[in-house]
Image (cartoon, rainbow, N blue to C red; front, top):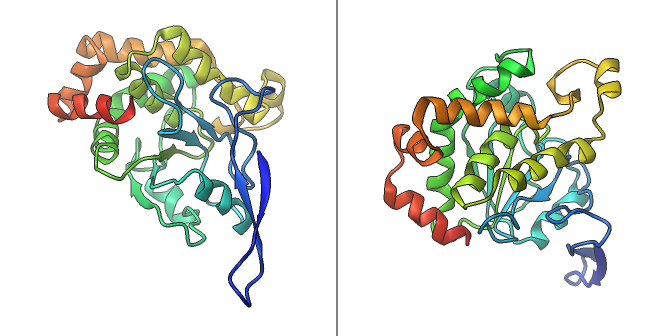
Length: 246
């Protein structure tokens, strides 16, 4: 990130405009921290998914006012929340006058899901079809991009959803997995840290977790496009997504 002073309107306090730039010290597709927002990064740069169109992160419910200029600098137009209804009720995203369109497309409507990650990932694949189709329909609306997709910590529900979208954009399994695993570094998650705390948000993700989700999709539907078509997507919508994100 680099900062540039921007003069405010007369009688108002000046503020700092935050221009997000790629750092040579970060993995491709990653950005420096946004205040109060965990695990924020660009989902692009894999397959034909372009940079600057689709972002991923944890929830915005703890973002302070000083975090908003970071998102404004991106020109963010859509925020898509994958959290359950109880989670959103308890900790709604904070807008701070940002002019984005907010959508709630939960993977799990209620705050109930398998505790074991080996069961969680196939379960997310089973439940994420309808929410992902809803996301696609939002992303192809004119003026909807750039968009941010998030859950609580941005690694499990967001990880599976972004992997599905990246697959549609011709990303390889290796590219998708590499991006998926970046959440561990961003969140500082290790097996040792998980042992000291409880909850899915404290547990590192593994390539096997994502593999189990994608195997579930392909074993039940044959392919990711067929999975989405079975959940109500239209061929024209999948093509429109490809056009919008490339």
